[in-house]
Image (tube, rainbow, N blue to C red; front, side, top):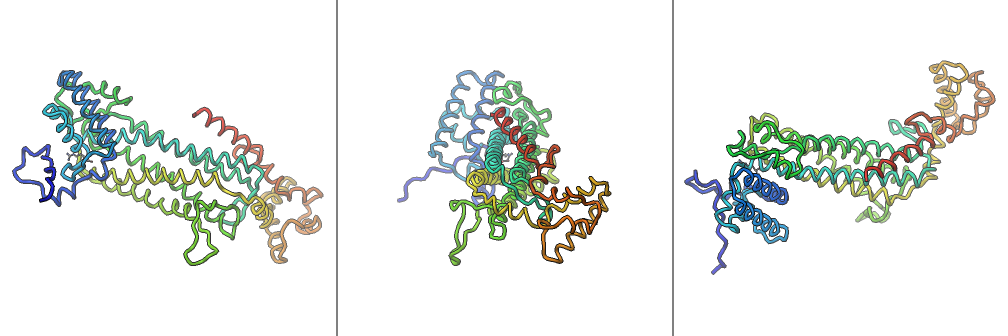
Length: 468
Ligand code: ARG
């Protein structure tokens, strides 16, 4: 004989039904595998709800205490891995309530007074996102710090700046890194802004219309640390804008991460040779013995599509949903959780990569010294001598064309040669043909002059200290 199995739990909504749920339907509908990770939030929300019911006189002090103790016990069972999840539980809310009632008996049936899973799940999700956004902000901040540290360490390194992936003008490597620090700062700003709309209490909205019980929603908000309560019950149970906003912010985080990842892939190629990735972050080839592949940045680049996809899938779930709650909304959590995890992992990996990068400053300097990166300096020199910029541009263009034809660069051009293109070139013309000089002249706010970059580094360090 097989050991006695625990019977499937009775549905908490079974009263109206004669027939049983088809087991295949049960499996199809169940969100437990995904939403079980909300158990802490669900318990915290239920505890606050108990206390609000107590304050409203719906529960006695003793009843509320009993429920709260039971909820803590359920939370512990789940945390300790002792909880038996079953598809018949449908979702985490039902699973917890069912177990609570097993533990505390009849009073368990009072927990859901004046509440619906609709306002409950909206609450859980907001509680979850509130914490997650804080973690994401910390992850972005750690990436910023690693970029700033590398920029400081490699402050002397000059590299070619690119447009169209063609060598354009020399820039400080530190300046290039700090561009990503700016992006991450905007990412943080977007998440902080989303947080303002996440941080709203939906509990007390009931299934859709509000609640018959004199629940002090502002009290519940205080218990859970929400600064604001939602003002329309229909909106509160069907709103997932805050999830979309978070996903949109995360999509941009990944866009930035992916651009940086792409640069690491390029820079670590033999064609560039600007950096070397640590062995610990690379793999070899099963066939070609010489290979060292940049898998980690490639996967960050590759996983960006997942996060974009999750944003699109949630927008599509919401499109055309009539008010208020519809079961479609259950599909919000899978995409959200996966996006959050992907971004957290990617940010962590990038920060570690940045921290252990070997920078080949000489290769960068060599690349910055060839390829006519100083042509613009020469044109600007002519402007100083009174030549209109368009004319100066054309003159230097002809010089470049001529040097290319003769397979030469700008480095060894003579004054006579310059003067054969324009009499405006004077003795000091050759002085502008230095990378250092070119950098130093970009001294306006936002430019790549060393002084400016150092200034910006200081600002970031001060900001991180103030944030800490
Ligand atoms: N598992 C559901 C969700 O995630 C919870 C709310 C279900 N509400 C309902 N009335 N069926 O959206």
